[in-house]
Length: 280
Image (cartoon, rainbow, N blue to C red):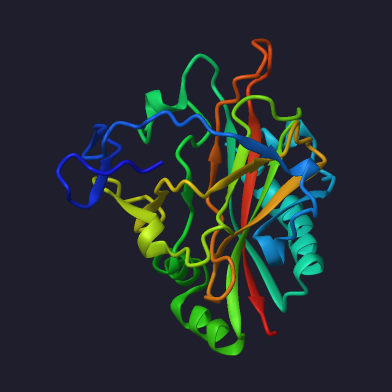
């Protein structure tokens, strides 16, 4: 989580050199709750996150071609439509557009903080709790992916819009660095300005958004995960919502589970982001 800066100024990172004014990360020992036993079960549209049984037609081998042009296109052509249908059915949205995916193939032998935001060939889970997007970065994605004119047309046509993320293990159930979500329902006035810190990037012109959004600590957060999440299951959570009276974003990130067995396989996971437009 965000722990301030060394100079009191806006936070920055330089991935090319590792330079930053962020204070060193603190280790937070937390109590974490299993969503499998949460009662009542969380619902995406109410709580901002949900677990669903949702098998995919893609094999592990097909997912792992993601670094090649053909593999990227395979995921877009076959996997994206599966999730588009899932979100349409789950939310009754008027329009759903998949637009981005990232696949993490963990390299064992490294702690994620060792290569924190450095540009390397070493793949690690995201160990900093964050929200992918606030209004500025969400709108930037919409305009970049669809064009400014089409983005404005969709915003004007529909009552509200959101970004929803779908997260799935690849190959084996997750044992190392599982995904957690942060439930901030106990903070009724939760907002980006007070609880999120913007972290800007230097010397990274190809980075796909204006800044990152790191979570600030709060004693009333409730931390949740799904034990042994399987490849035929997904975690679905709200990344951004233009409606201000609902959960606008779900903080999330990987966490170090002290009960992970030494022989546990490296984590492989795929996350897809979708634009979702509502008329209600």
